[in-house]
Image (tube, rainbow, N blue to C red; front, side, top):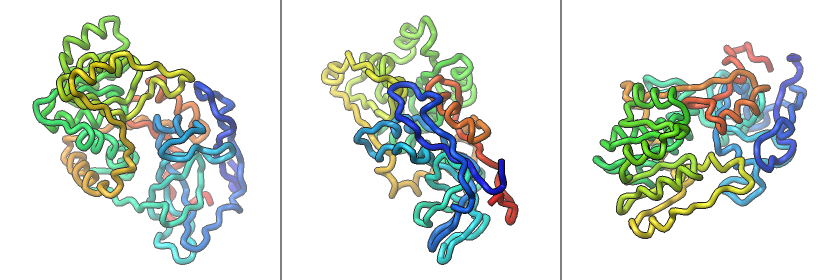
Amino acid sequence: MSLSTFTRIVLRERPEADVLPDTFETQTVSKDTLKAGPGEVVVQVTYLSLDPAMRGWLRDVRSYLPPVQIGEVMRALGQGVVVQVGNGSAFKEGDIVSGSFGWTEFAVMKDKALQKLTPPPGSTALDFLNTLGMPGMTAYFGLHDVGQLKSGETLLVSGAAGAVGSLVCQLGKRAGAKVIALAGSDDKCTWLENELGVDKALNYKSETFRKDFINAVGYLDVFFDNVGGEILDLALKNLNRNARVVLCGAISAYNSSKPRGLVNYQNIIAQRAKIQGFVVFDYTSQYPEAIADLAVGLGDGTLKRKFHVVEGLENASKALLMLFSGGNTGKLVLKVSDEPSLGSSRL
């Protein structure tokens, strides 16, 4: 790569179904554009988070965030190192920060759009893209505030081997629930049972899945759903009275132009159940208490995490597809660059 330029990836066209090679466009930009103004800094991006929600950000529809615009850098949360400081900025060179940088090697950011990262004991900066970041906040508040899980209840988790699902499983066990996890391979199921301690993990691709599901689940009290589609419909047939269904995501339908509708919804009436969606940004004021709680679990080893790291910004679009094919276990992140030492930035 030239020392005078950097790379960024922008949205070229909106995909109707699957993300395609032509969905994004790689651009080479002069580093002369990287000037920190008053109250701004330049950040060299080190890691970017890859999340299922990113597929939704490509749709030009009303949602909790405006869609990524054509020609705009693809939105992504990430972390990096401050390499240039503008007048009046509260940051200094070498600070590790997080923010919505997007798919780029460098970004000019306003102070108010950044958070300085200070990892608690037993954690690392990268945990702020996982357990101590959006996936962790999603799992924590989705399970405890929306799901209202109680000790002795049965918790079903779909997408259980992903970043959010794997933490939900562990928080469920910590709360005293019976936890049934759903994943898409035998290896993932083994990891969920042996490493995370779920009571039973089921491979939804197994020929005996529906029989295994009925035998393992019986009737559920809380369903934390990351998948939607047929899995959600199956769960609705197996609700306990006053069950709670937490709609976190619907990854099975994100690439579908005609998502499958529900059939078994009438059981929600019969069992006096609730089905509720949520957006993690609604809990921003409560993040500190969740981070403190989760950090204790990381520190004492009772909460485990796993990262799936893909290297190179040029592999961003291919890596994103792994979320929809089940190609990752744990938190999927993109490594953009090594962390620069003070004075050694490529800027």
